[in-house]
Image (cartoon, rainbow, N blue to C red; front, top):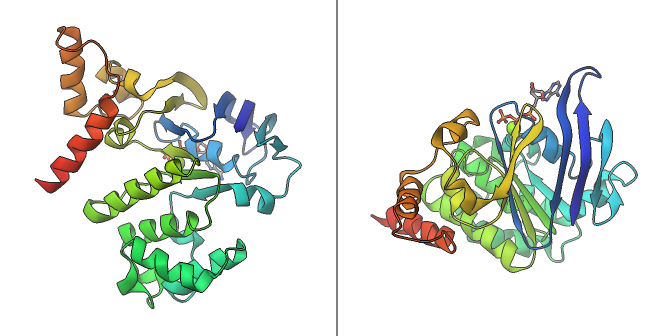
Length: 271
Ligand SMILES: Nc1ncnc2c1ncn2[C@@H]1O[C@H](COP(=O)(O)OP(=O)(O)OP(=O)(O)O)[C@@H](O)[C@H]1O
Ligand SMILES: [Mg+2]
């Protein structure tokens, strides 16, 4: 479990960009962190592997206080795919980029595993290219492929669907489901409500560094579109329709509907 306890953070020693944030990310669960630009989402997740240390409060990863634990030890547990994937690349080819990271994390047979990862994520044709020459979506899926490669316990994705469509989006979904099915936890920072509504999980919305909403995915379906809009979120039309069906008595609750949304998204992809 990751426990964020009364976390305050300031970059400049003056303005707090996280203010008294508390949350618990449990084993095997999916946790969404939503909120407008500049609300503090990326700052919050940088605390999860100790890249940033709390100005006040504390963060515990499986009981380890991030202030007292080396980042290398935390990084074995918490794998973060950042918003700007190209920042993590440093090898001359895609295959070396993957195998070197796996080797650094002590994965057995890293060269063989890297070849498998290339195939799993549909990246084989880019094997010998420089990662920097890939398109935006290709860079993003490569960074996801690398950061899931050594089965960390917590997978943290910062805006993972930006620039991903069609096939790569399906591969992202597959990577999330595989991680969850192995008992891992997934933390997703996103503005993409379609992605959020595809799986039932916990949700927090940040605004100006504070938690302003706490709940579960299915409860978002009932939130007023205007309220969601203030946090930079757009409710998909099918979620509005479902909400209407509930208020008009056609259905009683949303239980299980996130699964249906995932199916709808899959069908629409193929239409
Ligand atoms: N290195 C930094 N130095 C100073 N201020 C920073 C730094 N990084 C972020 N900030 C500020 O902290 C606040 C929160 O930024 P953060 O990147 O966490 O927001 P975000 O919710 O991830 O936004 P976005 O949706 O645009 O990615 C913003 O006001 C931002 O300008
Ligand atoms: Mg961000």
